[in-house]
Every structure is written in structure tokens, then in C-alpha cells.
Length: 406
Image 1 (cartoon, rainbow, N blue to C red):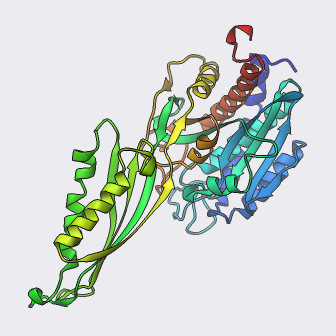
Image 2: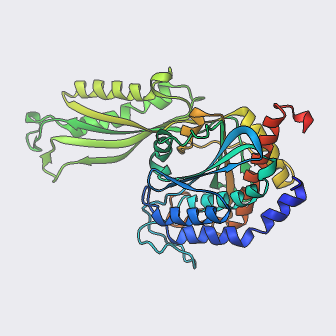
Image 3: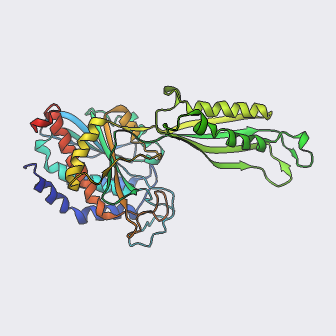
């Protein structure tokens, strides 16, 4: 098949109803992380009908390899599968039928887009010099990518590069967010238990009040993001849950604080900023001041997602053709987390934001909201973007990066 603009345009437009139906089916039957059994079966059936051989990984993940017409690199294309524990409030014919579970982040659209792209890319099999590994990943919301990597998803064949996208309500429908460098933030989650000595509120001198210490921790730790780390290195510390006490006349023994640290750079021991270490230092110092002890548990939930410049350029050219020009290609960065970062840590990768916010269609509610929905007109933009980006990737690799030889 000739790799022409007309061919791709015709193939993509012919999938409009099919991709929309796939997305709505996934939306009606959402499943939580590592419980995506029906979802996986639906994906497997579709891929088998394309002549591919899907395999399971990590129970509910699905992986399938398209072998091209010649030797070359392997490109991974990824879509996430899991829904959220949210009760849907949208009054739509395809609203969730699974009580208390909802696709409130766009993963239903991601799966439909990747399946549509797979259907087209199979038709270009003979001109692809290399392989495409289609990966449908469970449990994106809680670090599913690392589990798939540990299970060997980047091997057999060995993956050289990766691409992905995310439906994005903060961007207007028809916009594509692309930027080299950090685009999604790292996130550490923490739980701090401040331990004092319980007592009567009428005799506070006989107690050690952990609430005062906890309040001091909340206040003093704000210096991390406002006084200790450059404002040019975005850092956000949020305390989102505070638990203490049983009644109004008892000083409690403990206070529990929970929250998150987000930052748009590599954190922890590999960074001079050390945001988590700074938080530990402040907690220790404050507790000593208030004669309290503490326990602190801190876990890395997401790493910073860093887009490779060369991969971004490949997708930027594809996006320009997809949209007709580059006026709606915007640079976009978020402090949200995305575990595609684990793939990007291993191989050169690009991850795009696919704008789907449309106020008139009521698709501009924030992600994870019970009213979240998408503008389905952007589904085919996503399909075309992945198809064109993939084909361009292999063309660039085949010519050794010499764009003039295309």
C-alpha cells in the first residue's frame, strides 16, 4: 500500500463509528486496576480479528506485536485500561453500568484510539521496517507500568522507543500538547504519624499535644516550596488528610497526616533539591521541638515524565500533518502524574496531550470528576496522530535520521 496522505485520511475517517463504539463500550463497563478482565477480553478479541496474536501480562494487561516487512527497531505504543472508584453523574446513554466505578480519566478513549491505530497500522505492515508492540496497560493510576516492565514487556522483542497520549480536558478540542523535557510531575505520597501523650484538655500541661506539633509541620514545611527550592523548579507540597482525636475534651495520643509531594524534575537521592529529604528534616525538627516522636512512610508513586527531543520532533511533524498546520500544537506541562514515565525512563519516548475540552459539549470538567466526559470528535485525531507518528518513526530510523532522504 502506498503511504500517502489520502490513504491515511480515508482509512482514519472510515473508523469514526467503530472507534466511538469501542470507547462507549469501554465506558459502560469500567473496571478498576488489575480487575480489567472484561476489558482485556474485548481488546484480545479485536486484536485477533486484525490477525495479531495478543498475550496476557500481569493478569489483565494485553500485549501484541506487529511484525513489519523488514528488520528494524521496535516501537511501543501504549494505552492504559483502568477506571476509577468514582460514581458517574453524567446523563448519557453509555454511562457506567458498574456502580461506583467510572472511566473518569479518559482511559476508555485511549484504548479505543490505540485499537483504531492498530487496525490501520496492520495495513502498512509491509512498509514497516521493524516491529510495533501494542501495550494495553492495567492499573495506570497506581504504578502499573513498572509492574509490566518487571514482567518483561520491554523485551522479546526489545523495545527501542515508546509513544503514548492522554485525552486532556484542560486543552481545547483539536489542540495537541507537545513539549520536549519534563511534562508530567514526579509524585511522592507520604503518611506521617505524630506521637504525643494523651490527656485531659483541662490539664494540658500533663499531656504532650501532637495536634500543635502537626499544625507546626503543616505550616513550617511550606518553606520547602517557597523558600528552599527555586520557583523555576516547580514543587508542590499538599497535606490532603488529617486524622486526630475522638472527642472535644481529650488531647489525643497521635495525629496522622497524609499528602503528596509533586515536582517537575527528578527528585529523591538523584536530585540536589531532595524535596522528600527536606520534608523528613522538618518533621524531625518540629517533633523534637514539641517533645513528640513520629513515624513517617514515604513512597514514590510516579517519576517525572521526560519527553525525548527527537521523539517529540517526530510526533510534531506528524501532528502538523494531522491537524493541517501547527497553529494548534501547543507546549503544555502539568503537575499531575503519569506512569508512562516508567517507559520514558527506559527508552526514548514521547507522550502527547490530546485536547478534548469543549464547554458547549460539557467536556471541560476536570479529570477524576464524576462529570468528566470527552469530546468524541477528537478520537480520530488521536488515531491519526499515532498512525502518522509511528510511520514517520520507522521512516526516520530507516534513513538513519536523514530527513532529507524521505
